Image (cartoon, rainbow, N blue to C red; front, top):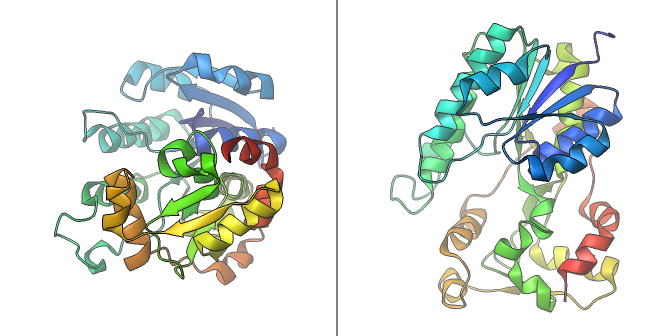
Length: 305
């Protein structure tokens, strides 16, 4: 096999980032094995050309079997309902098992903004989901200290796919009536990235380890207000879509989930700060929101009213 072509285990393969990674890696000639605990949802992955390994990160034997013969890993941290410690515990086991199995390059996805936690306004007050941020940071540290031959940590900002199913019904249910109701301020610009671009960076990392190994890269393609997002969706779907900015209190009173509203408050007060200009040095083309929306025209058309 060409040294630039890998056999990649994709963990979290039926999720937003994982399925994009499967698609992107296959398109570039890599062999892909998809680890999933939901085989019924994996049919489309086999149709793409991926192998499917059924298993759970909490099952050491299943993980070790899935890693057999793999030269790379693309890992999306997976949370376990009712077990707050599982995400870190399972990630640590995956890192160790990957090292034992001879994996040459480990690509971990995280989130932009880790590593600066104590500088967040109101940090330590319990207002933010501090466990979420701390867990992501600890997983990154486990990757860095895991003794792997090569690793890359990709830290996406707000995913554009949050605006389509399956995320949109939770995060933006009002899209069904042609509105984006949000506690994000009217003039607040939100950095965004597509899952496809995350996958493109993962493929580039595996193919150019000399450039990407040891790197932690915050990812964003552009920064838009939610009103600009609504205008782009309107233009692409030919519907009248508008953004409605509420205060956090108004948003909760209107029935928006408190966890979602807290996340939008975070965008107002902290936000993502990836260096978009600096990303050009990696040679990976970024997808603007309008282009992404055009690619997803059909599903956006189903999401709006």
